[in-house]
Length: 161
Image (cartoon, rainbow, N blue to C red; front, side, top):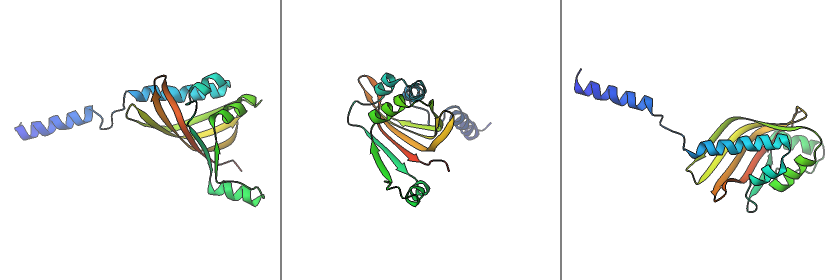
């Protein structure tokens, strides 16, 4: 086999064996944060939920879709497209709610350099098994001395109906 052909074959084999976008080692840690969030939400475990977030200096925004904003305004609701909030209000609301809460995630994408990270996914938010919102959600995370913490959350609001 000519040398050039062997070299090309070797390069082809090496490129097939090593993915171009190999996952960062921190990706597994970040996936565990996502899993802990889902578990703690369903368990209404406020302490675990609080521990996943930076105690301060974080952002929480819900953003109404065009369809949702139009529906609210058609009903005469003085709705904001972008509504600020915070993780503490969300956690308190989840814990106080008598209904069973669950949020399913799909198409999870993580991007990290091991110091900061972003997580993006599709979600469906359920109360007693009934869909109450769906859309896309994105988190920013930072690695602290105490491990990964969520520093911001943004999500779309698309209520059924």
